[in-house]
Image (cartoon, rainbow, N blue to C red):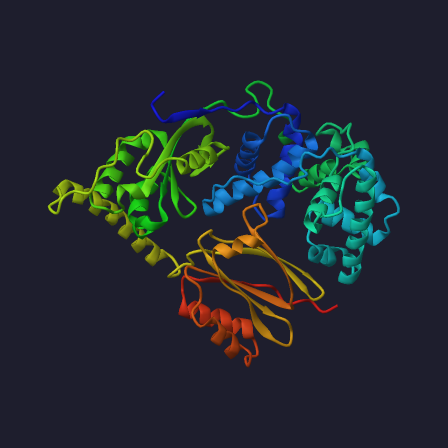
Length: 496
């Protein structure tokens, strides 16, 4: 094995996890409004199975499946490859009696909240819409379930004195999703006995609904018999990172590397193992003209189980590659010859040709986008979801690590800036799952993402106060001032 290359191994998952992981992955894709084609389901499930730790219970595997399915979608949609942070209580052994205890004495509204909100994962606003139940009643029922859960879990020996509401809700969700055991075969789910069993077994209930909707077939729930749950194919990956001080040359490096692999996040690339020679030549050409200097690049070459699929690397190998690259000294890239220092003032023509070719690729790409796109696109797009309860807005959003975030709130009688020019500081809102969470006392909330913050935001907010639709005014003015910005606004609260 070449110097600097290390191997990452992985065991075959337990076949007993195939069915619960398939159901959970399919359900998560549906909940996130993904069109679940067979190839998408297969890739998402394979990614989850490749990332699962060994020795998991079914309950643990289902929670990991939720986390790694979200991780798969971040890779597909945003090119984000991050180590998934799991719940601190994910290894807690759940007692079957806890679900029974929690469901004892639930009134009809609490039962709806327990099944639709905690088990199926719908926000209360969705529960309100489909169950036709008043929002205040739903919020009260959720509070009663939380109180009951604290009591039941304390009786089970858990210390919940300083447990946050978010951590408690995750525990309740896991309890609400417990299988009742002795589940029927995939075909048996559609029998009368299967339907009766599914009434009290959340995973089987979801499986039955997914089969009826055509998202799954019974055959999808049967594990493969001969070749294992995942392939044993190995791949080589080269992870290349650029220093923050070298990002003025990001476009040059991207033009040189992007056709040899995939861009990840805002500072790196994952390169296919068979492109090392090509990448070595191109990076050497850029180093010789200081675009960027060699001490602004580093990388690591790893080998292990994984698979490329439609420009996405499935499995845990990319995380190992990126973390290994971050441990390398700047100017060192495993698997490549040493990057050269800058050439003297009269550089060789063929080196300039390499750089010109890279810049030409970038120019062609930019021209194509100008002809086919909608103009300037946001540098750091925002994905956000909102939960609205009475006078509170909860916003869970995701944007680039390098984005500067501003938050404006409308409390009904005033418009104000809640947070301004948050760069590193926005980390205090992190959920630990790669996104951010804010709960604000407000009627509406606007989140703004931009490369450097919005100049004069306070003046814009004051000007918006006299407008009939202040957030519409703000969005228009912000995009005029900074076309690379992106904004999201919570919907208008429905009147009870």
